[in-house]
Each structure stands twice: as structure tokens, then as C-alpha cells.
Length: 365
Image (cartoon, rainbow, N blue to C red):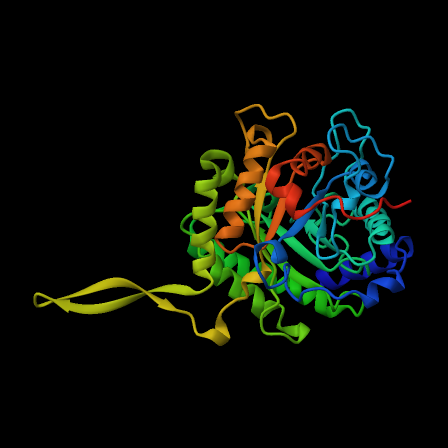
């Protein structure tokens, strides 16, 4: 009942501020997953973080002063995806506001007007307050938004004090993921203006978690859309790039992608007269296997790296470029770049990225 009342409040409060999706977007041919099939360069897809109106300007305004590589909007291709970080709390100086649902709706309209073919994802938190940044269902009925993907980590989980403490243990986390994604997909399905949106997840990267199994959960939650394998998942792999470079990142991408194909099961065997349980790896049945194109891996980096701290602050554009190459070689297609537009400007000048996303389009405007 509380959920229904919440949804009704949002519908009445938020819809008037949202412009309809441009008609040109209806003619766009886009992959069913986050990235298309094909070779590495063909399937390469950028997920671009948007925190502020300034970020939107950098992609939509040809005269925007990015210091390194100039206008970056002409690097974007139709299959690339903008990710509105609705968890953004604003900057310290107060010049950039928190991304409340109202702010996020305005940014979505600006992006869709400039890039009618490109999809938009709302990266949401788990905050129950519909007027706050990080609201669990931010932009749930916005016609410009393709999917809602919940950031699943302690800082978001703890936004609701009624929840039990966060646990890294996989069995506990999987139960909570099943419950939460059921609520998310159920909310989207309950309203005509939201019914076509996908329900996704952005979990921490923990070595004991099985992301193929989590992807199967998301597929089930999105079965209401009429397809078997439509669940978007973005794993927070950025520390592997930051701490171990291209080799470590490529290795982790390979491990995650293998979880989309293989599962580990326990089997009883008799050895030397004793019955023992062993773990063996088996292929997941093809009809149950999640689609790798619905997976995105993450790289965080800075235009002014410190060499220490979080991946976002210590990783350089050059390291990020090397990680892209390694990830593509291991089979990844979609890359979520959790980085500023200044950092993206530097990335576009790196050897691999310059070839993947040359400034081939004429500047808009």
C-alpha cells in the first residue's frame, strides 16, 4: 500500500516537468542489450556518467571549454548510453545542486533533445525519500529513461535505517537482491508510464559473489518485457584497473564473463571408501544462460590522478585506456566510465580510445 501511494505521489508531482521523447528516437536501431554483438570495436559501448548540468553541457554544447580534447559530444555514438547519477549530493561550493528527481528530469530532457537516439539510465540509490537524491525510484515514469539500475552497496543500503545491517556474505546479499529487484520491477510494471523500463543492478565487485547468478535473477525480473534475457547489470570492477592495471582488469572481466556461462555445483564422490563433497564446474543450460551483452564493467579515473586513494582519484586516463583494451580482448562490450567530463576529454586522446571513438561527427549547434 505504501509503495502504491509513493508511486501515485511521483506520478502527480513529476510528470509535468518532463518533455516527451523526441519522435526521431523512435526510428533508432539499438541493441537489445547494453552493447551490440560483434568484434571488440563494434560492440564497444560507453556508459557516460552525468552528475551535473555542467556535464550535460560538455556533451551538448560545441563551444564548451574542455581543456584537453575540445568538444566531446562528437565522440558519442548512438549505441552509447548516458547514466544519470541520481545519487549525486551536490558539490562542496554549492554551485551544483543535488540530483533530486526534479533536477534529474531536466537533465534527461536536455540529453534526449541533443541525442535522440541515445538511451538514458537512471543510476538510483536506495533512499525511500522521493524528494531526495538517491531516491530508489527516481525517474521511474520518465519517458526519456530506458532503465533504472540500483546502486547496491553499503552507503546506499544504509540510507534506509529500517533495513538490517549490510552483509558481504553472498547468500545474504543474493536474498536481498532478489527481494529488492522484485520490488523494483514490480513498481515499474505497476504503472503504464513505467512498464517498458528495465530493472537493473550496480553491485559491488566481491570475489565470492556470482554475477552470472545475479544476472539470471535480473532476467527473471525483466521477463515482463517479453524477452528471456533483458536484465542489465553493471559490476563495480574499477579497483581491478586501479590496483592491477590492464592485466588485473582483464583477468577479472574474464572471471565475471565465465560466471555467465558456467556454474559451480557440489557433487558427492566416493574416494578411498569415503564419501566426499567436491565442487565441479558445469555449463549453464543455454536457455537459462544470461546474455553477456547486458553486462557492463566499470572503470573510474581522473584527469588529475593522485596515485593514491580511491580508483576515481588515483587512476590515470592512460591506465583506463589500457584497461579498455584488455577488457575488450576478454569479451566485454559495455564500459561504464565513472569519471568527470574533463577526465573523459583526456581519455579520448589516448591511443586505444582515439581509435574506438574518433571525433567523426560534426559538432552540434
